[in-house]
Each structure stands twice: as structure tokens, then as C-alpha cells.
Length: 355
Image 1 (tube, rainbow, N blue to C red):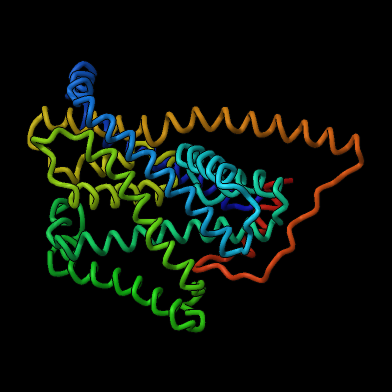
Image 2: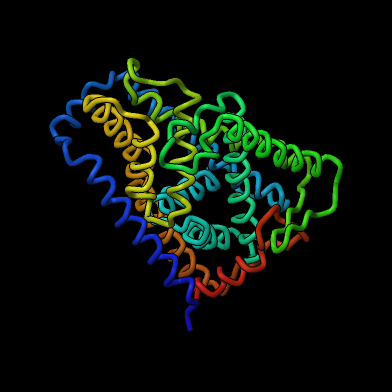
């Protein structure tokens, strides 16, 4: 019997798409497709190139997530090329499908078990990658609010008043950075796991923690750079405000469970940009479309080709192994812990969904 959550989260995602789609329609009903297309064509070629390079930076950092997790597991026999292709395919599909933890887990399960990893090891890898992203969001979110506490005032009237107050925003920013500082200190000092109700924070080795603190912000900076470079210079508020708005929009889109954050990301980003006229709205929509093309749609098309090629090669290898009576064995499993997420629950989910 399937879990209720398997039906609840897709329904929540569908509801988020419908509601955000309605508000997005209200926001854009006076905008013409011709005006948006004109705004896209107005983006200088060199800035399109910079947006494309930002995409490469983001996906390279995502591949680093997997490499860091494999180092945490003590697995070193898998090539960078395989890790990069697996990570790229995982995120390209999960970004578009939604429910990235489990949709990404299934792709990784198929890929890494072919290299001899066990379900438990894949579960730890998925959990650590998810926590690395979470850590980067907390770090950059805290940084942007400390650097410019007035950023949340852009959402004044749409958020509770105490959240848009610069003093409150500064306190939130300091709190976020304090969480990261606690994580760093716990790793360096080898502190015992931190328990907060059902939440358990394990501290990895300092070498792993240091890599996390570089890889996660790098990925988010690359992703935010796509929109930053696609915006016209005349109405660009600067990288820090764009980064803050991107982090808020992307986080809300992920939390909504909407496939690809469709509609949710757009309405939050457009609202937070504080549009003053139709020309600005067209330019922002054009920038968001460029972001979706580079970060979502092109990687998704490429990933489908990669998956088909991988499954075809795996099928051929399975036929060859059966003909010679060979069966690859798993990599010996080392005792590991994973920061912040329940790897055992994820392992059970992986095994059940892989059947």
C-alpha cells in the first residue's frame, strides 16, 4: 500500500502551480508575447554568453556536491566524468520534475549501484548533497541580509511587517550565519551530534565541511548569475539584491513542490523586483525565461539523451554478464554519518521505489 505522502505532495505541488499560475496571469495579463520576445532579443550577445557560462559554473558545482559525498563515503574509484554526468542528469531531471530529493535519489540509485555502491551508500550520498545545498542557501541568505538588511522591504505588504523591518532582517541574517558557524565549529572540534526534536545534525570531517562551504555558494552564485546577466544594465539593482531575490524565489519554489517551481518562482521573483512600468516587467520576464532555458530546459533535453544512452549501455552489459555468468559485487560499505538528514529512511524509500 502506498504512503499517503505520495499522494499529498503531488497534490500540494499541483495546487501551488494552479494558485501561482493564477497570480502570475493577473500580473502578466497586460503583457504581450511580442513585447517579451523583443526584450529577449534586446539582451546583448555577450551577456547571453555570460549567462551560459554561469550555467556551466552552477552545474559544475553540483557535480562537486556528488564528489564531496563520495569522498565522505570513502569511495574514490568512480571517475569525475561519470560523477559529472550522473550529477548533471540528476539535477536536470529533478529541477524539472520537482520533489528533487527523491526524484534525484532514484536517478543516482540507478547510476551508482551500477558502479557497485549499496542502497545505504546512495542514501547517504543523496542526503549529504541535499544538506550541502541547504547549507549554501543558509550561508548566502545570511550574508545578503547582513550586507543589506533592507532587502526584505521589497516584499513590504506581502510579508508580515516584522519580517520586512531592516532590524529584524539583520537579526535573521546573523542567526543564519550563526547556524553555519555552529556547523563549522562542530566539525572542527568534533562535537557530538546536535539533537533538536527529530532533527539530528551530524558533523562531518573538516575537509568535507570546507568543500561544502565552497561548492554550495558557488552553485547558487552561478544560478543567480544567469538572471543577473540576462537583466538589462539600466534596471539591474546589482548582484547582491538579485542574489537575495533569487534565493528567496528558488527556496519558495522548492518548498512548494511544484514541478520545476513553475509559476511559483516567477511570481515571487517578479514581485520582489519592484516593477515600476511595463518595460521593466517585460525585461524581467525575458530574464526569467533565459534562466529557465539555460538552467531547466536545455539540461533536461540533454539529460534524457544521457539516460537513454546509460540504460542502453547497462542493458548491453547485463546481457554480456549473464552470458559469461558474472555478477558485479557491491563496494564494501563503510560506517558513515550524514549531516542533518535521516539516511536510513531514505534508504528504505530508495529500495521500495526501485522495485
